[in-house]
Structure formats: C-alpha cells, structure tokens
Image (cartoon, rainbow, N blue to C red; front, side, top):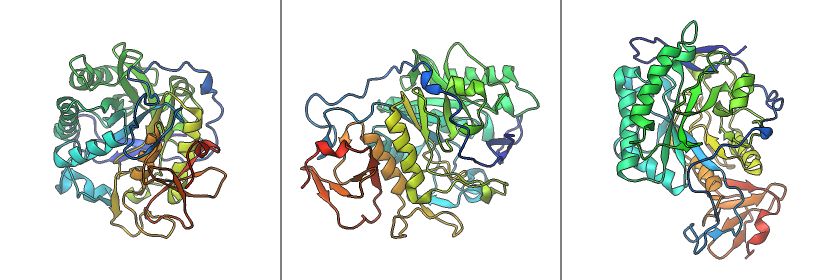
Length: 404
C-alpha cells in the first residue's frame, strides 16, 4: 500500500502538512507488468537532437555522425529553498551543503550558476516542483518559481520550464478537483500561458505533471495542458498513471520501458527525516549508470532526471559536500569525496546525444578498458580516474572513435 506521509513542514495556511514519497519499501519488481512501449509517443515541440551538419557542438570533443540517442532531457528542480532561518529549510532537511553555499531557489547568483550548468549540459527543460501547493511558505515558493521563469525568458535561455503540481488531488480526505483547477489557473498564468516563451510544449500544449497518490484523482485532466503522471515511486503507480506516462518521482528499478518517458534517479533517502523508509543506495554511482544505460538504449521521447537539488529526499545531483557523517558520501572508487560526481555524470550522459566531451572518461558496458576523451581520440587509462565518473556506454559505440 502506497502511504503518503508528511514530507516537509511548510507554512501553508489552508492546505496543512504535505508529503510526497511513499513509506512503502522499494522493491525491484513490479515495473515490467505494463507494456508502455506500445503507447503513443508524444510530439515534443522543440528542435530535434540531430547530428551537427557542420563543426562540432562539443568544444574540443569528439562528435558522432549518428546520435547515440535523441531524447529530450528534463530535470526536477526544487523551488522551496530559502537562505537561512527556519523558513529556509536547509538546516532542518539537508545533510549536504551546495558547494556555492546555501541559497534561495531560482534567484540571484545561485540560479545564474545553475543555469550555466544546465545550458552546458544542453538540458531541454526544468520541471518546477510545485507539488506542495502553489501557496506554500506564504507565497515564497511561488516567488522563487516566478523569478526563475523570468530569468529563463529575459536571458532567452535554451532551457525551458514546465510545472509539477497536484497537491489538492491527494492531500485531503478526497481529491479536491476545484482546488486543483485553481492551481492550474495559477500555473497557466505564471508559467504556461502564451505570454511565456520559456514554457515547454508537448503535443502543442504546455506540459504539466500531476503528482498524486495512485487512485487519488489520477484521472484529472485540463484541456489547456498536456498532462503527465507522477507518484511516490513508479513501481507503485496505478494502471492509469502508467498509461498516462510516469515522469517521477522516484524511478526505482527497473524503470518501465516506455517510448514516451523514462527516468533516472541517483538514489533516495528520507530515513534521516524520521520516516520508516528503506533508502535507495547510490552504490557509488552504479545505480545512476544502470538507469542511464537503460534509458539511452530505449531512446524515449523524454528522459527525466530526479533531481537537481532535492537535498531533503537526497535525490540531488547538484555539486555538494556532506555535512552529516551518516549521510552517503559522494565519492569516487578511491573513497574520495567528489562534490560534482553526479552532476558530471548527468552532463556526460546528456551530451552523449552529440558525442564525447573532451576530458570525459568512458568505457563500454562489457569491456573493462577505460579511455580518456581528448580532441583527437581516446587515450587508454591504466588506472581509474580520480573524482571523475566513468560513463558506461553501449557495446560497440566507441568503435567509431580513434584510439591513441
């Protein structure tokens, strides 16, 4: 049974305490029952990922003639972080500290740094996490999301935005469809309407992900949006949510093969928040590698990363250092803490749509040989790199590049 329990203590005057993830244990079975590969693929209204017709889009990299995969890449983005104090949530919820210090989501130098990283990895869109209600924290979360959207538009960024919501569908004793419609009105005005050049379109409409418990209003629709589904863990989703397509929250193994969307999660834990949950261990990056390989081979329309900066539920990949010795160390094979380990891995896998980035380390799935990527070819390595992830790629992919 998928039981949603209080996730974060936020200042929400009308809707009360909120939750998102399941208290049920995470199994590794159950995701193969629904053959989502037979579902219709969505029409993504953005430029396709094609091989460059001239030059190489990767500085000093090795571009491929035929893309390894062509999926759009989306990523969940936490918008409730505030700088310091009880309302900031950092000290109550996070066992990690971003390398650039604690920050206010979507604003200032912190988001400028985030956006630079997103553009460098050629991210297609951010999924703004409004699943706790658009009026939460006295409106501060909405202000952060508005500032983020404004920055994307004023800078004419290549990164777009969509919104995940759905709190009124599952937070009460029964789905409140009227309240959800009101939230949709807010999202349309602030993020998704025709005035917003940053909106991410699917099938010609702004994209909205409805996060809710299985069976709790998961049939909700709004003709203004193309709607995707999300729930605590994809293995616990309802049959209807699987039919719609699952864009989060936690992609436990094995993720469903679905030509519309597949997800990648580096790990997950809320046990430190006092919940009776079983963490999903990062396995030194091996979990992230397996999920990326599975998604790349399937080549869905969208690959969702969960997440950039949800340090509360420890799905984040944003460069950070550990504050609590009980938290999982983000480390290389030598046991050295590497703050950017998961961000570097996500960047490398995203750029595989174009080729190999200079300075990356790669190996084929069933070949132990590791290579350093240079602008002239692949250099064999005698030892594992320090503080650099090794990107596993499908067998045979490296044959097209010269070995030095």
